Image (tube, rainbow, N blue to C red):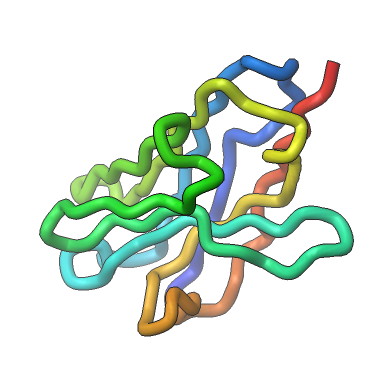
Length: 118
């Protein structure tokens, strides 16, 4: 069973930046596409970004141009650099391996809270 531990969230003003990290319990990045998801209060969890094992990236329209997903295979870690943050980015952010239909393949971690507010 893979364990996913997200970190790096916090309170930031609109226009600010944060870098999220996700550490996995074993090496899954080399064969699986990895992604970030988020869940805002009262809303369903949504896919945000993904990174294939070949290095291709995809982003939701709402974050395109502001967020960047990357990974470090030596550390079994995937990152999400978030710039130009907006209040609507406020959510709990999760990482997971991305399956067909952009569904997460493993059990969800606790996530990390991102709050964008002045």
